[in-house]
Amino acid sequence: MTEDIGGGDATTEVVVDPKARVRAHIEARARGILAGNAIASLAFAELDPEVEIDWLAPEGSEVKPGVRVAEIRGRARAILSAERVALNFLQRLSGVATLTRAFVRAVEGTDVQILDTRKTTPSLRMLEKHATAVGGAHNHRFGLFDGLLIKENHAKVAGSLTRAVEKARARSLGLPIMAEARTVEDAEILATLGVDRILLDNFTPSQVAVAVKRLRALAKAGKLETPRAAVASARKGAAAKGGGGTAVAPPESALPEIEVSGGIRLDNVREFALPGVKYISVGALTHSAPALDLSLLVVDVS
Image 1 (tube, rainbow, N blue to C red):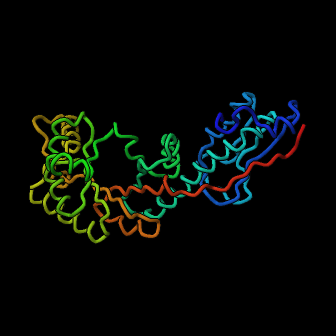
Image 2: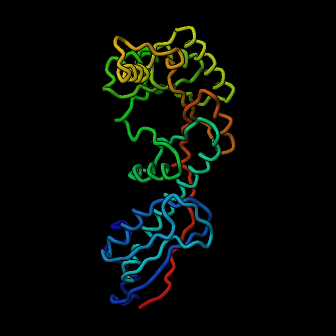
Image 3: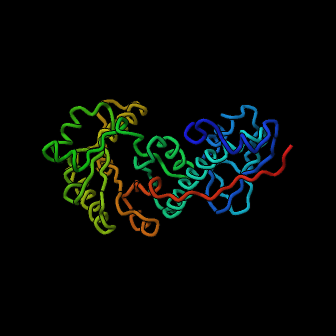
């Protein structure tokens, strides 16, 4: 609001009577998924604490051209001055939710979950990750603090992929350990080291299938170190059943979670939703989502 209004809304202060009140509505101009209702409401309330807003379309609902999504009643100056900021948030977040819903629908019927990424607009990560959740995706790491993700550059600085994982396992801070594989061989190394999740980066669908097949073969042969998360889960299950001693996880549970990323588009995402893949992360959800076209129109003045 400070960025937009600055020292004052020159046009509104000159043209609009300070005592005027209006009734307005927000209307959809395109089909999409609505998100950002709360932050849009805050923009209006910032200038008129007594503003009344009725959301005719709840967050997460699908809207189409001509549909009224909200009715607003309050001081004319406040509504006109807050209009752009409110719509900017609403259009941006609805655009993210709309694209996300399209990706989620594209993998319906599979066991794959769509994830967002950290490729968000600076200062808007919390809101954009909320919008992806509204669209049906799951949130990946919120930041660098809530999970260990060893990428190519980390491995290079640490000395090798193996060395990076060993350091992470020695001092994981209680966080899940994820690591990026650039080749099928990388994936095999990571699985034998017992990471919680392997991120297959820029693989083709056929390469993903090969990687999953090889990891399952290693698990069946008992050559994989069970991820800590699977061990903890197995122990918890044994304790709940009154069992004693150390829980022994079955071979399949030794498999780390598999995530696929890189080169994922709406027209090819289903090709990557293969058996054995649990997650597909899509940066485009937040860095390439087009805004949903919405507009605010004044209905009457009093």
